[in-house]
Amino acid sequence: PITDDLHPLKDFKNKYIDGIIILEDDLEISTDFYDYFRSGYQLLKKDASLFTISAFNDNGQADYIDLNHGADKLYRSDFFSGLGWIMTNKLWIEISKIWPKAFWDDWLREPSIRKGRSIIRPEISRIYHFSNSGSSNNQYQTQLAKIVLNNEYINWEDRDLNYLMKNEYDSKYLDIVYIYSLKLSSIEQLINGNVTELHFLWKQKLVDLAQEKNQYFTHSNSDDTTLYTKLHNSPIRYS
Image (cartoon, rainbow, N blue to C red):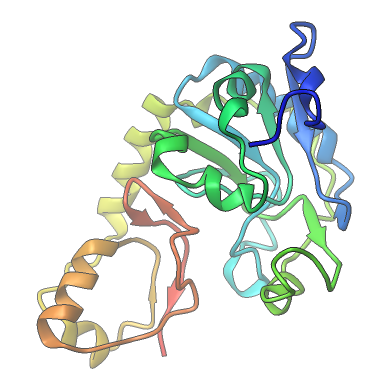
């Protein structure tokens, strides 16, 4: 771990600093970027079940977002996006002593660090990654280059974000899940049937079915970036 004397965030323990926005130096921001965080931060302060507010949707390519009506849509997520986020003074005090020297974004996704807390993320990203270099050796640039940057200004001060509070959000979220869920009795129903798009999917159920039949399949969202309450909550298209 980096010592307090050398850490660039060493002054963040100052009680007069409530929170900071963490950005990398190769990001372009949207016109409503600061207003988005200003309003999101108010939510973060009053909902203890939240880990952070993120400006990034890891699956924010044009094919997977609502370009026409998604500019003001926000979601709770179980996945930490590391390309533009806000950290509270309280969180920094909690984790600063064990902050890693590198790959801190992966470290923040560890269950022992996130502790079941959720992340708020936008439908359409508020940041765009334009660099071809970095600590990840450019392995994600193909995907990052396709992320859409929001170009519609949203006056977030006029938006009531209380629907994102855990109790209210979870109740409505699960109602929607059960309305749009597809009951699968076998993996063949998915592979051989006419199912081309799923908006909600119990990840473990699908994994169990695939293992049972010793079959493999691929989908565009190959990791857990869209998970909330163990559900994928964005369209997953299969081929």
